[in-house]
Length: 148
Image 1 (cartoon, rainbow, N blue to C red):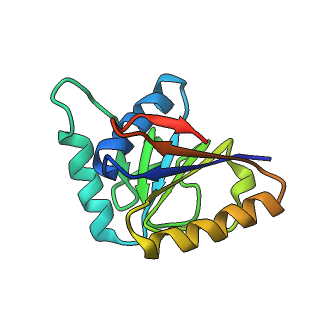
Image 2: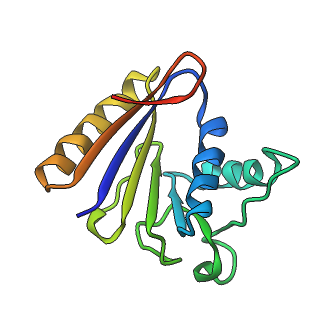
């Protein structure tokens, strides 16, 4: 079974939270895939990961570039695991048919967007019903993660 995490963004946007979470994963030696629902979002994330911090580097690529299997972090709109990721980030309501092939599946969602919350609630119920270990994280007023 996978660990399924739900990260409720409230005080810091995805653009601030995602790079930090990806850094933590790479520190642990985990390959990651970040799945969005549009190519425009993938392009924006690609630009973000090159520029988010002048002192940091997150090796990554998109599924539109050559050799996605070589990427430690792959940005994709595809459901398949093209880079052998053990951690799957799902944003913008992205879904995958089988969470069980990953060590961790991480749903990142904007808690201030009522349309984003309902699909995540459904994903929570589905993950629980499938027997996955489910954990909910919420940002405090400083943007730090608190387990709830």
